[in-house]
Every structure is written in structure tokens, then in C-alpha cells.
Image 1: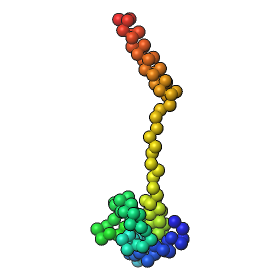
Image 2: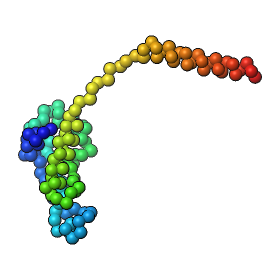
Image 3: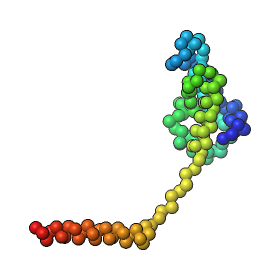
Image 4: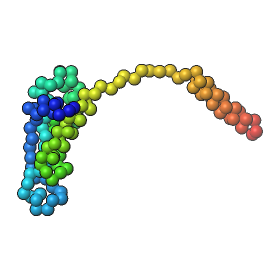
Length: 135
């Protein structure tokens, strides 16, 4: 998802900020740098019903009870950087969840593989037969 798609997502995104823990000294106690991104999937008109269903299924662990997808970022000391990181994470999360997996085509083993397996079985059987005759 590029910059254009991020701009299309913005009307359906809310940000909450709060004070972040960790390094930063007294600065941490004064500035709200922790960012919580809330994305409203249900009201987003960018996705079809099929895509929304796929997103709901693959991102079920990230959904809150009110239907919002939640991402919390506190990696940087800057609120703006944390918002940018959260947007990048959201777009990559959505892109990854929307990607459809290729269906596996069932295949059969080739003639050489079948022959190699039978040869290995025969060799193992002969080994055990030879052991028996020694006793």
C-alpha cells in the first residue's frame, strides 16, 4: 500500500495519545508520545464485503469489542514518528491479511522417487534377513 492508499484510510482512523514509559527521563512524564491507532473496518468503504470478511478472519486477535482494529506504538520519543510507524504497520498488516494464498496442487511422487523408496525398503529387509540367519 502506497501513500495514496494511506490517505484513503485516514478518514477511518482515530489516534489516541498517552504518556509512554521507558527511557527519556523527565521528558517521558511531560509529553504524550505513545500512540494508539484505532481503525474502523466496518465503516471503511475501501474494501468489499469479501475483503472485510477476510480481514475480520485473519486479524481477529487485533479486533476490540467495538469493532476497531487496534495498534499501539511507543517505539520513538516523538509522537509524530510513532503515528507514522503506526500507519505503516496498519498498511502492511492490511496488505498481508488481504493477500490470498495460492492453493496447493496435490502431486504424486515421480517414478525415480518410488523406485528409490522401494530399493531402500528392499535393502533394509535384506539387512534384517541376514541378521536372522546368523543367530
